[in-house]
Length: 392
Ligand SMILES: [Fe+2]
Image (cartoon, rainbow, N blue to C red; front, side):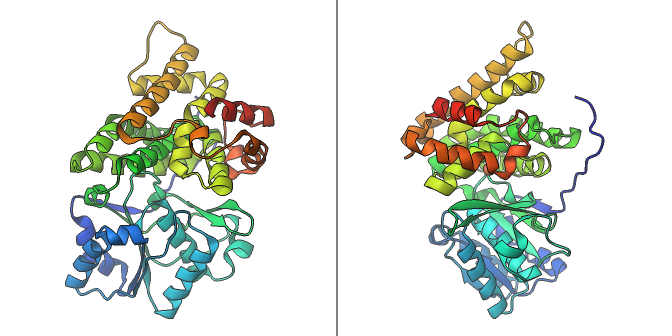
């Protein structure tokens, strides 16, 4: 790989990690000048007691809670984003605390755009780099190890009117503070652990082969791959194991930093389409499509996939880069089978409500998805169809 002519790398998020940190980070709020945060979460997280765990610690340290919004659905949507922003303004809050997975975090990022910059989310802020100044303080406490959204410059929000997953990208979108507490993921069921973990692994792999990969994003992507393949199956098998959960949280965050700089590719493009059109959960869609997206990109990234084989521990000195690349793909296929066995993760599109008559619409949406310009091999109608057929 030649050095790129120009690149930048910027991870502005302060990260605190440790068992129990989510129940005691008042000193951080004080430093940020946040006195009345709005907490945003979903009903399941609240029912699991994870909101109480955070709120109890904050109250004990004298923080006033500006309100709790617990109505974020599985896929964050424009109307939910607007409701959060309204509550934030109505209650006169001075910062956001997101407790949840990708949907909660991205909803809060959207609400932060509306509350912090004003205007209409869709009309004024669609696309990239529309913000001209920093937003409100944003604290993210992930309850999954997958999205990495706490450190990324992107938010994906479902537009109910167009049935499309819209992407917002801006340098002011990463969280001010990420609170990584393995205790927050201990109750995550094996299937969601597997799906979100595969999302994180897809971030790392796509970041590593994409056109915008740089030596710095590579460093993060490689380490994220190493960590995730070493700990994902164990985290599914032993959910209470704080060590495994902790590694997965780190792996997901590191993968987030990687893809926030070199972006994702065709696997995410298809996953966004499957999510927007058929509500297939993001991690499940990525897991199903990943090896076939890799296969499509292999001819133009043999050396890179060969390196991935090395990271996965399946590299063979006597084989060509192409053959080693195939071994990396085979490793992912085997990992999917293992996750199906230990966590019930679906492995085919036909298992998640996709039918062949949906292919034309999926292809259409994939080819115009924001990720398509970063995929290392040009995305074509025939190419995406081939991936879908293989994944079916
Ligand atoms: Fe993702």
